[in-house]
Length: 95
Image (cartoon, rainbow, N blue to C red; front, top):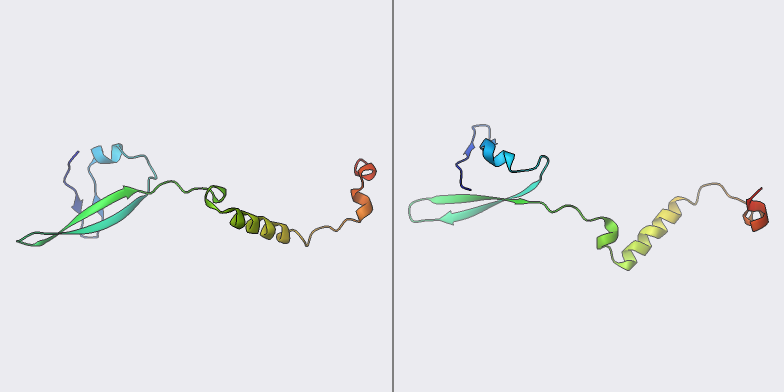
């Protein structure tokens, strides 16, 4: 699909409705400006590429990074309630 778009005086890129209807709301794009030289004048090409959805930490982290994050989480809970060892014995847990 080819369309003509216009940049307003305030710098807003105005897209035709048929283009906007083809894009899901809240879609994020990376904007690249590519220089296209010709013999008459310097021109630019604007390239919009969708940003891939962010991967969760566990999907991209190495085992070492996951272990470090777990240790940080454990350390963040150290200041909590201190129970005596007797409270953790099996026969006392159900009291």
